[in-house]
Image 1 (tube, rainbow, N blue to C red):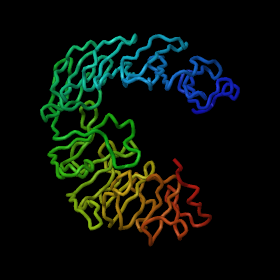
Image 2 (image 1 turned 120 degrees about the vertical axis):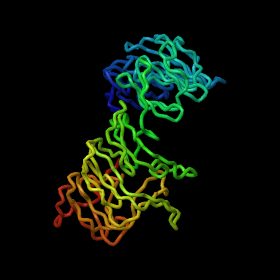
Image 3 (image 1 turned 180 degrees about the vertical axis):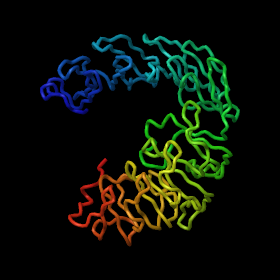
Image 4 (image 1 turned 120 degrees about the horizontal axis):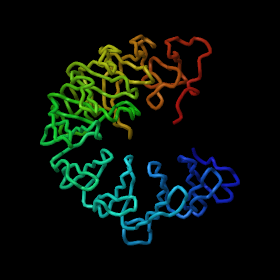
Amino acid sequence: MHNHLPAHIKEKFQVTYSEYKADGFTLFKAQNQQWGVVKNDSEILIVAQYDSISYQENKRWFIGVNFNKASTTKRWSYFIHSVDGQLKVQTDQYDSISVDTFGHIICKRDRQFGLLNDDLEEVITPKYESLKAISKDLLQAEKHHAFGLIDNKEKIIYDFTISNIFGSLQNGWLIIQENGQFYHINPYQLKRIALPYSHILRASSNTYAAPNKNDLDKFKTVVDGLNIHEDYDIDDFFNLSGKWGIMDCNGEALIAPSYTFIDFFRSTNYYKVASGKIQFELSEEGNWIAKGGKWGVINKCNEVAVPLKFDWIEEISENLFAVNLGGVVYYNDDFQENYWTAKGGKWGVINIEGAVVVPIEYDTLMLNWFRVKDYIFVQKNTTTFKGALAHDVYDFQGNKIEKNKPDYRKHIFYE
């Protein structure tokens, strides 16, 4: 919530911008370009004196920062205030200080990371290439480009032999990669179980605004994976062959690796999947194209929701999918937001029950931010939607609007 402070408070404290955080606290920027804190929209808690300020809800702290612009070092000054506004402690010994979701205070000095206590005293001297908490009492540390696991007192729990760590500690277990092999480990019980995958990849998607944040603790898995385009770096679909599935952070196979490719949607309940042998070629226009795959949708129980018979499929709203028959799948790299899509062929819309909402007979449909809002506007005889030309309109139930067609300009997203 922004700029909600009462007018008399804005005038009294010369507020130019404000942002409500939590617990009745509002951070504000004053005319002097400095930041402070107002409590309950009425009481000044911290006067505007910092270059930036943040509220750490899990610590019940405010952290004010001054950038030391005149200093020859890159170190900033940090000031910790309690929720009553009192200054607790300050330091100018670090390049950065941050509080993670577990309440750890990670510090950085001269490109090395360490750990501080609540009094900003060093518990772990900055000496690691990276440092990240994966539970309340376990951290992954990096040195010499390898990872190990240490506790809050820097006792080594797992030696620095790990090349990759996936997710956070779940039920005492963690997924790692070591010497080219993937394992499910319990670092406290010294248990290690080999996982039957050639590759494990973090959640990613070709769909706009996907994956859902609830899917960030899931991973793509591949068996018999081969790097097929080592000279290019586009995405996992292009670079890696094999059989694809989904695994959760507990090491459980949610979708057994059986598809030519699998991808996340915005909806956490469904996955986009491909079957068949996919081959990549460079088109005359200079775009990579993918031939041979058939696309559909499965649910999280690995049941087919939309049959794998389409040449391309895109999620355009909750439980609605644009499908293409006869088109060519190609990689659009003309814009900053690069993505795979299809050109040519005929488009239609299918719902999650596999029912046809829009007949597959149109040359284009109007998408805004890669989505439809509340109506589906489709058109023939053009490859891009042109509102001035004749077009058809359907609602999400598949009813074609013949009279009093809605104006497409009133049914688009503006952000």
